[in-house]
Length: 162
Image 1 (cartoon, rainbow, N blue to C red):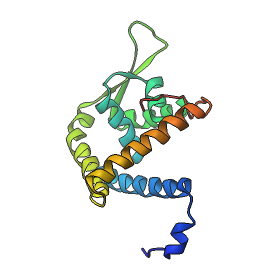
Image 2: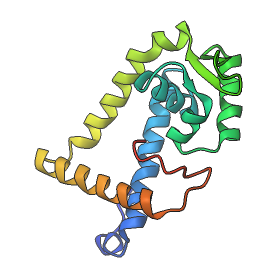
Image 3: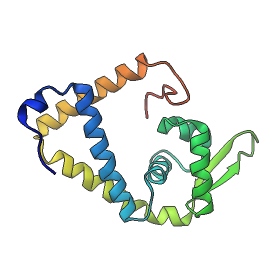
């Protein structure tokens, strides 16, 4: 991959640059997930369950990932078919579908976590500790602003903590 000329990089807006960085990080994550046998969406769903809690409602899972419920449902259906998750109706409210990890997905947790940590270390290695903190605080500030400024839709349910 070649590096664009310096003057080209100066003309890039912050939004364009952030979009490019996000695509590169996404590609790196996809490659790492594929190396352990997961597709990107599957890895993100499992990460939510590993990080937050097993037995999340399907709706909360979709909101946490900022995806529409039908999109989540289709992915979860394939994951259930492939033995990554199990879906069950809530005992107290039959309208709620809960998503549970299987032994297959639990056994992959440490490997996937190590893979994500490795990617974070690779990205952080080009920044000093001070630059990392500034970068993190800046991204959090932009995230909070956009999360509050954008209207809530199925694709942006306004979940601050996600």
